[in-house]
Amino acid sequence: MLFVDSTDPKEIEDIFAWGVASGVTTNPLIFARESGGADLEGRIKEVLAVSHGHVSVELVTEDETAMLEEAAGYAAWDEERICIKVPFGEVGLRVAHQLSQRGVATNVTCMMSFNQAYLAALAGATYVSIFSGRVRDTGYDVRPTIQQTREQIDREGLDSEIIIGSVRHMMDVNDSLAAGAHIVTVPPPLLRKMLHHPKTDEVIAQFAAAWKNRGA
Ligand code: E4P
Image (cartoon, rainbow, N blue to C red; front, side):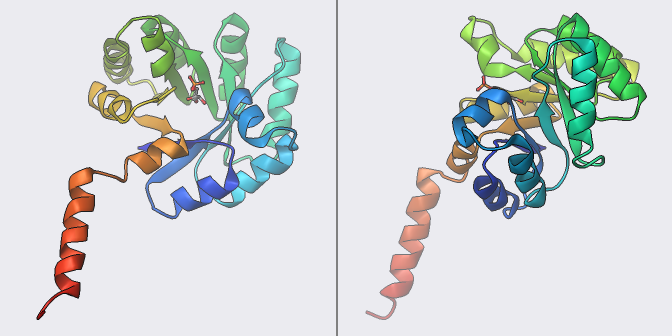
């Protein structure tokens, strides 16, 4: 499955109209880049209106009580569709576990290793997010991490789904799905690149020219 990694309602609306997307992920960096000084609640509500499935919103507070309060505020925007994105760590696991016990969808994020993703899955995360590009930045192949995480989730019958984020090239999408990711979250510019192949463009142009010049 594909999610859209964006806070841009126009782009999200366009891509959902293709019928290929099942959810949206956001993070504070994407929000700062795409939405600048916009109001978070207003922007997320715009995103909710033009999409379907879970919309992940990331916690920015850092202690347990504040994170739980922040999560409750976001969840109230749409209890069915808001998914609380929780940065991985000891406090993050405690928060994700409590939210999962309250029936709130969670996306434990910023993970780079099997060990982290396994802990998040055991804690009850709805989604475990592994950051492909960030792992590759350190010189390591992310595919064994994805494969090992998927095998363990399946072996133990855990409910978590793997989201691969930090996707930078089309091959990252292919590799992630082949390695066992349930979902890849892709930025709109990369989704648009996935539309194109030079031979497709060539053959469509050839057919159009032949049709135009028929009988000439
Ligand atoms: C995933 O959920 C994240 O929003 C995102 O993909 C992070 O990617 P980055 O490495 O481009 O910041």
